Image (spheres, rainbow, N blue to C red):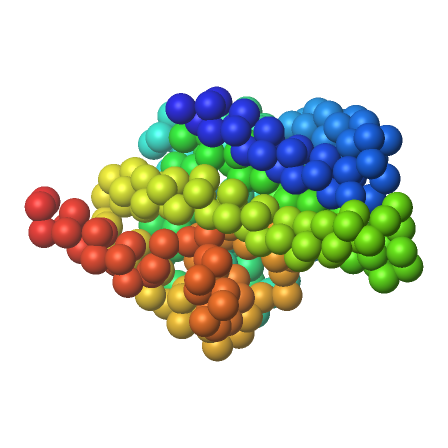
Length: 278
């Protein structure tokens, strides 16, 4: 199922690039966009995790420099029978976390300094288990590729808007199409991310709660993280928002409408139902 979703994701985002290419330079633009999408697909598969980590400003840590965090990741990785991922910390007051990597053998878990300040040991374990579940379910490949490709769509759409301003279209009809595409493409890229991301968050919550053995701790962590992210929005690239355990932005009306995350209240409700069934 993940393979099918990945193919659909890449095809859809590549299609957006080619549509923009058409309105910028006709058939030549389509050909250029096609080649660009192939290069991005190849590059994002092999290098998107490194790009996302650099975009987030995450710095790798060792067992000596972050013993509690490192021990938590190692304990849960062993429990889940996963290779030990690389561990990163982001110097961000906003509490959040994400996982990345094309497979469990090339995975990384990153948390912010803010998350370390507000979560207790059980809550931190719940968050790490959630991220390791993404790795085990191979959601991280889809997520990191989506971040790279969506970022490319946003970049090209921005260029297309400037192109429309300076009359890059060959005629009036193409210029109108260029403007419309430049506006619609980023929204479409976000919707594609939403379609992939939301169901995977529910699954990672459930499997992460089972891995840590304390669904109520993960529920408590989500509540704290949502409040923290709203009080201190993260300085993050919008194209990577879906990778984080909670929406890293303030959660205004428009952002909620296009959020790649399910409502935190529903996630907490599902986790507490798991607790009641124990």
